[in-house]
Structures are given as C-alpha cells and as structure tokens.
Length: 521
Image 1 (cartoon, rainbow, N blue to C red):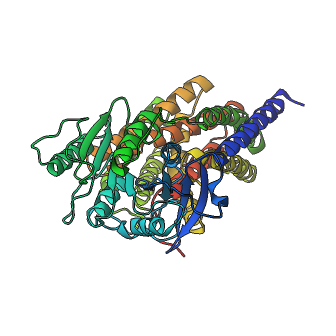
Image 2 (cartoon, one colour):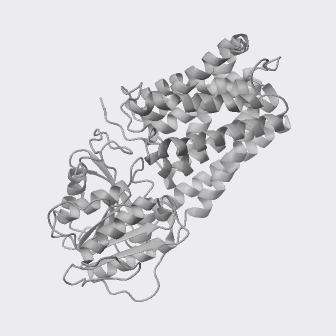
Image 3 (cartoon, one colour):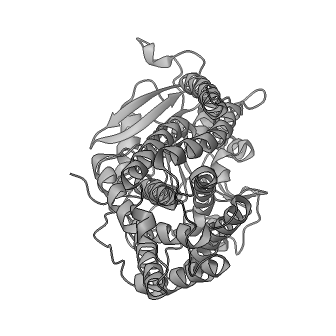
C-alpha cells in the first residue's frame, strides 16, 4: 500500500478516536438533556451534579436556581455549551436555547435591529418552562445572553420583574421602557468593538444613577434588586469571552449574589472537552493534506498551467472584483431571495465579484474553459467525496462549537450558494494558483487574506453588514482550512476546477449552516 494511503488511514483512525473521546466527554457531567419547548423551540437543559439528575423520581429537597442562556447572532446553543457547563458545574440549572432561525430552531427568524423585542417570545417560553419545572427553583431565575442574546436578555428583564437578575455578555445595546432590570451585570471583552463597550457602560451608569460607571465596581443592593456592575475582561474578544473561565467566574459570582447562594470553596471551572477538541482539530487539519492529494489523484491532472493574465497581477484583479462588487450589493442584495440574514449579502458579494472577475478574464482572453471541462466527471466525483469527508469531520467536531448540520431549507440554499459563488472561486484559483507549490500557496494565501481585509473595509464603509467583523475569526479559520486542502490538491494534480468546487461548496455550506434563516417549509 502506498505511503499516502497509509498516512491517510492512520490520521483518520486517530481522528475517529479523538471524536469518540470527545463524544464521551460531551455526554459526561454535568447532566444535560434535549428539551423541546412549546412552539417547537429546541433547548438543552443542564443540571448540576455528577449524577444524571434526569433519572430522579422525585424533585430534590433543595432544587437549584436556574439560568436561561441565550446565544448571539449567527450562533446557537451548541456554541454556548462551554459557558453552560461552567455555570452548571457551579450549582445552577442552565437552559440554553436556540432562538428562532438559529441552530436547529425551525421557526423563521423575525428579529432585527428595529424590533428589539423580536426574541422576547423565545425567552419567555424558556423562563415559563423553568418556572413550571419541578427540578429547579422557579422563583430564582436569571437571564443571561451573549451579543444579540444580551440584547434579548436586557429586553426581557425590563418586562419580567420576577427575575432575580440579568447578565449581558458583550451586548445589551438599548434599554427599553418599563421595569429596570434587576441586578444587571454588563460584562464585555477588552477587544470588543467600542460601540459595545461604550453602550454597555452607558446603560450600566444609567441604571446605577451615576454619570459614569467604574469598571469592576458594584453599585446598588442585591437584596433590593438594584445591583449594577460593568466589567471589562482583559485579553478577550467578542467570541473568546464565552469560552473564558475567568469571564465565567465573574458571571457565577454575580449569580451567587443575585440568587443569594452561599459558596464555600473554589469554583469548578474545568473544561474537560477543550484539549480533546484541540487534538481533533489538529488531526482534521493534518487529514486535509492526504485528503487533498487523494482527491487530486481521483480528479485527474491538468496537463498545462493556465496562461494569460494572472499570477501576482491576479491579486489586483481579485481586489478589483471584490471592491467593484461592493456598491452593487451595498443597498440591496442581488440574491435577496436568499432567506439568510447577512448570508444573502455574503453570497451576493461573492457572486457579483465572480461575474466581474470572469468578465475581466474573458476580455483578456485568458479564461481556460478547456481546462475546466477536462476530467469534469472525475473532478465532480472527487470534489463530492472530499466534501462528504469534510462535512462528516466538521459536524463531528462541532459539539464544542456551532451545529453545522443542515435542515432541508439550509441544504437547498447551500447548494444554490455554491453554484452562485463558483465563478468567483474558479477565477480566484485560476489567477492565483500558478507556478510552484510554494509560490502558488503564498499567492493564494495572500488572496484569502485580501478577502479578510476587504470584509473589514466593507463593514467600516457600511456596504457590508457590520456583524461580519464580529465573526471575522470564524471566516479566517474557514479560509485557512480551505487553503490547506487547496494546496494539497494542487501539489499532485494542478486541478483548479476541483479546488474551486470544494472552495465554493465549503464556504456556502458554512454560510447556510450558521446564518439566521427567515424561511422554513
């Protein structure tokens, strides 16, 4: 057997072993169970303790206080599972929900910047469930949310005076009329955008009745429900704050004070899944190398290097395409029929940029249609096999991140998105991936970095959704993984069509799986 296949099998076996251990750790304490709330709202309920509390026949003598945990925009309850475990490990029941249009919630997303109470029904269903659930103390409930979820927590806390408190993580952008939220903690990252930090501090100061609030200082009285605090967590950003044990410690201490929970001893902030998840990710990256080579062998080799405009000039053309496409999608997304919030803008931008790049190549008489058609059947077969492996592997790892499985609606729009963005990725690969493996990989990596730079520029120019800045680390990670596969496939086949098909399918899948959806069958 060839060394390539031996290496592929060895890495795949190690990866599967890592996934098996990750699944075992995920199923371990704290006890957790799927809950389908009224209105077909999916949630996961975590209960404190080492034993599986869901097998209890009678409610405990001292049921734990409870927390409703609300994720942010483009996130889901799976992304919040690390924080949910931190809180549950320290004596609290946690009900993590998927709000409408996110995760596995099949209800269309109806929220928006103008209707700040759009998620109120989702939060209310979760609170009502906990108030009627006999294994938790329904009289002691706190709502906690991240980013968009922080806004939902703040909004709901203004209309439900029976809550014990509210925790706003990197969010809570406006205070609606009504009751002042009880025992409000605003906690945000040092590297959060300035508007998040300033708005959180301003609302906290207003609630505390002071001109400006001092970070880390508690104002008011917990027993009266008037406690307010704003805390900036050093060294963290908008995403990492929900995985941080230090941030979780600050939140648990606030919960203790809000719920009047005495605590003896140190907090339990163990993250049993983290190291195994990192090993699985490393093995996945290594697995992409033989996967790309094997897919390249199946697809067949391109006998000639593309000629004409491209190479280092290709970076300029990619820049021109992305820049010229921004005004075309700035006001109305050409694929506004896509029921994916923000996703429609992303697909529109790459589609328009692809059309512009293809037109440039046609005018320069450089586009190699013959190369594209060469080995087309085996190329599609190889790309399909590669994407199935990538899909299964990433879904297996997603227990600590975002759920990446596709509902029927998301599957349809993933396929359509891949078709619409294929011209961009084919033009991208055709122009940049030329010459030796080293030079082509360097040039293509710079091209992917250029995409990141253009996203930042487009967001600041307000022609692309600003929320893209908040998920930039995710976009960067996906582009980096795509390049590992692409370089490996190129090293043995030079088949640019194979790489472009995988690029477009992979990118469209992530967009379809993570962005809020406004349409369901």
